[in-house]
Image (cartoon, rainbow, N blue to C red; front, top):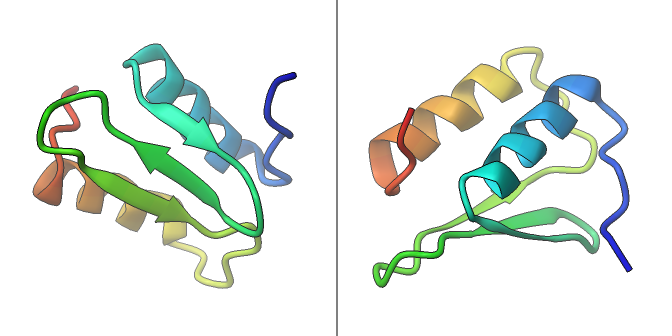
Length: 70
């Protein structure tokens, strides 16, 4: 069975992009992104973020502190 969709379309796009890049996406109270590389990078995505810049900030953090590649 697949994961549930994120309620915000911008974050759903981010989760789908992560899946295309080989990251594992787990859902629960929050969505969790697990990197496929040996470094074991990890990022949590909130289910109901209150910051209007949350998507941009999440992408920036992925680029800065994980093996996320464009």
